[in-house]
Length: 276
Image 1 (cartoon, rainbow, N blue to C red):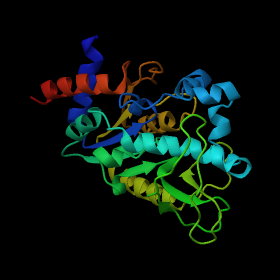
Image 2 (cartoon, rainbow, N blue to C red):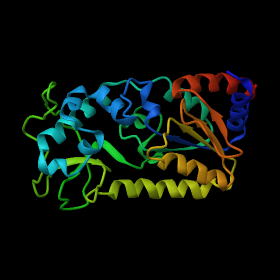
Image 3 (cartoon, helix red, strand yellow):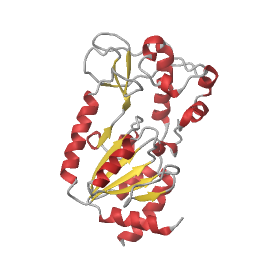
């Protein structure tokens, strides 16, 4: 690896007063979570759906909870079990070290809850696409979002859920994950709105300081995370983009072409040199 961008990134972190950690799906790959990049990536993770010709967009869809609730919940029950069982990789602990002593917030499109498990509190994270660990009514009958403590059973071959399926405690209609899905007009945004308000308050306090945006594994297909970093860079924040494939950056930003864990290990070494 060329030393210069790593040194620049470490120096930017060392001089920062506040760090915004932004992350996409690439942050979870090193923990063993599947990469849904493209239809082939999705079918590698779920070969049962290849045979049926089902794509991620058709499964991560609120309409499926109406047309085939067993299949919809089987897909999410499998993911929920996976996210609960997987141990977040060492990079989360490195992030804790890199951000120590600085004001910190996390903005992520991931729904796995791994930042809360290993790095930050609920008050320090904005899960812009929601969380698989929370439920809502499919109607929805109200703005209630509640924690998902259920152990859901499903057929490992067909990935179809077994009864009983989760129900809304108010109206007893079918419940669904509080995740922003494709074509989703029924997402209950009360929890996300509260996180967004906390994030805006944090930005208001830190935009005038030496702010560094550390972006990890955010792709271009759904560019929510990338756009935030680039918008903040226009306002004067430093931007470090870590990505093994989509590493291009606007002028003035730092590109580190590597996976999240590999990059964080290298960045920690460079940061320790820069801080000494």
